[in-house]
Length: 190
Image (cartoon, rainbow, N blue to C red; front, side, top):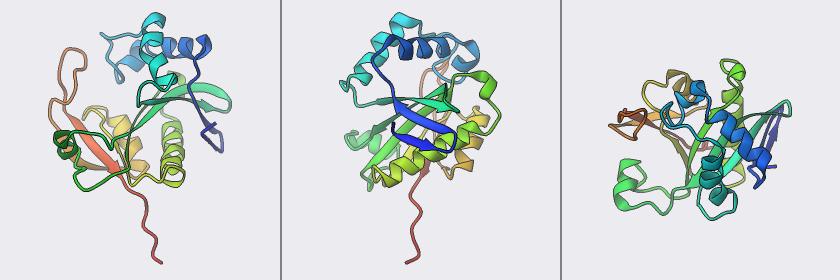
């Protein structure tokens, strides 16, 4: 278990069929896919195993986690250290002078848990983990500009818009713009 705060628990994804089936359930749901991966890009079970098993087994730098709310699995969160980016990518993400930066992605896969403030709770708990346990100097996230609900959640957690990333990644046949958003640890006044 990585994080346990109030009703939120975040644990590493495991190499077992139960975890893969949860991900397949979420990443074949059109409501979830509209915001994560795209409705034209579902992940049935075989594709989930092919994509996520290398991460689970530590063969990929992305670390996959499952999120629980009151002991019910409701979502997914992944994080990754960005220290080994190319100089071009470091400039794109405004990281020229920063090391120990983590990128994160997340979604709530159980759509009946949307619009309840749970995303803010899970992200806040995980941001605290990255700053306090992994000693992150900065955390970045890059939502599509039209994902208003996610952007509002990230802002509630202290992320600020740093830069517009034009035509950032393929989503449903288009290359929408994304916001680069970042948060740094609060500096103490002592």
